[in-house]
Image 1: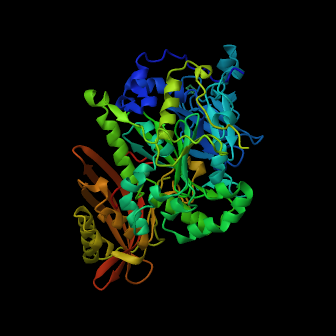
Image 2: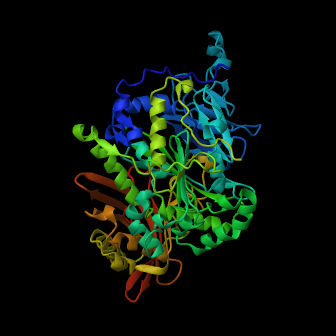
Image 3: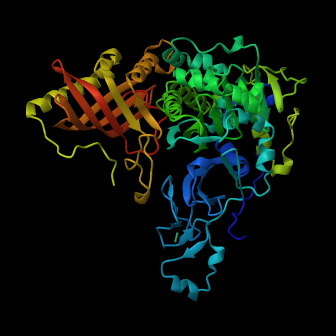
Length: 448
Length: 182
Ligand code: FES
Ligand SMILES: [Fe+2]
């Protein structure tokens, strides 16, 4: 198919890459948050290669429904097809490259370019042009000039991912055993999940990795950073994570999920007792569906990042993508997730509660943004950026005797997930293609 | 189609004197915010206040939402009752609100004030335009412009804010947060 996208040429890896990342010794360099050459490599070797979250199925339920988003810095259109499938196109006209869809979401029969009037159907085919006669005179082959289609699109439990790389492993392989944990949020009830309407977009002057890393496994910051928000919402400090008897950090292929088994620790900070009650009410049916263990994770103290930049908090139900916009800038796209089967007033309380806590006006988020921006800004100093940063907590916490899938580490107050995240980041930047990426997983790929 | 503000079918402007009283109220409200007198600011809220700043969605004219670029059941920056506003204030006032120390320096400005009689006696419908400038640290500066529609209730010689609709033109917020009220 000629309308399938051309992949970008892969340039050589940076020669000094190993200076930036020494995971075995628990060290990374501040430079990875602001170096321009590293960022260019990331766009090519991570964002043009990995599976990236592009939409939730519920955002585009009907034929012709679309949303626009970005994969890395590339703008794309995600559109529901007549056959119920989903296609993802570059949001750029193959004539001179003008953007073809300017709205963030809507419903349409096609896309017409404002420049010279090329017109595409929702399947991306070029179906007409202004002054079409002159094209015929030039032996123009319409079938070759449709919207450029992203190489692979697939979805898992309502989450739609896409990759520019035809060589990328399947989404299932990419996510690996992480799906077992994701079920606790995305498949805890019959009918699955949906997004509340809208998408809040905001801008941070920070590197995309510092935000993604925060969600991959940094519960350590919560008790300190978010003390003020917890006191405002709960009237007291956040749950003391070191008091939990059992908690884990699990990772795979750079993805990471850290969690306790306290069922409602995360949802409690929304300050809506009806939501805690809802979680307790559905718990027996979750246990039946997913087993006892995961029924404790529905809204427990936890966070997750799917490599490279898709993150969420089960309980607050904030879903987000940290869109890279240069080494020192991101756009945060955030959404609110609810169970489709939840009563309307519960959905409503989640919509408001998620915004009240994790959004640009969110009482928790405000303190995060400040931290991430200044982690990034200090690294711009020539000397400061060259210094090592410590990332060594929980070095010897791998659980070898466990039935849990994935690379399982004891305790969520642990930098094991962050290390695995940066190791995977390094492995991508060090590789020319998927085949060169080492498999560093040590845990079980499947649930027994 | 522009962002829709709430308007009544028939707008009845108030007297110059009443207009002046409302203008003074709005100016004072903003000064209280600039001076971080949050408790006094909260005291201006009606017990049933609805303080709403919907997210703005960049939609085509043929695909508009309930209110054009926004909808009541979509994501919002603020969709608050009094309890929620109190919680936000409580966070600002914690000694552990690390990101508020050093504090944020605010200048709130309000203009284009139109005052009309409201739906019931003692209620006023007020349109205005605002500008919020914040500076933090040595050099951070954030400016937010927008339009507001308020419903004020006259109570014991002063006003209480019963409803506020805040509309910004931006579909993407150009800063990391809104650590103030608008
Ligand atoms: S650029 Fe789109 S038709 Fe020419
Ligand atoms: Fe945080």
